[in-house]
Length: 70
Image 1 (cartoon, rainbow, N blue to C red):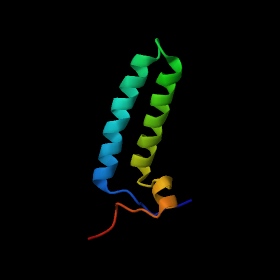
Image 2 (image 1 turned 90 degrees about the vertical axis):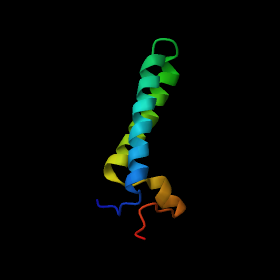
Image 3 (image 1 turned 135 degrees about the vertical axis):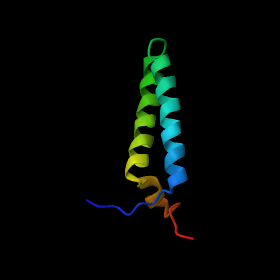
Image 4 (image 1 turned 90 degrees about the horizontal axis):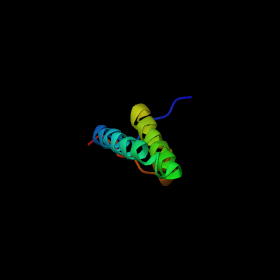
């Protein structure tokens, strides 16, 4: 299945940075609040996946595209 990329390079970098932040926060929360830790890590993984493939299903559903050529 092939999707048209709808996220700009800057958007993808921001998502990658957010993944790192959420993953670190999630791992630090695992011992005190496991549910929050797992939730933070899961959201981070979703951001990493959308950054990697360059396609965001939420953007597609809303008709958004940050990858427009100027």
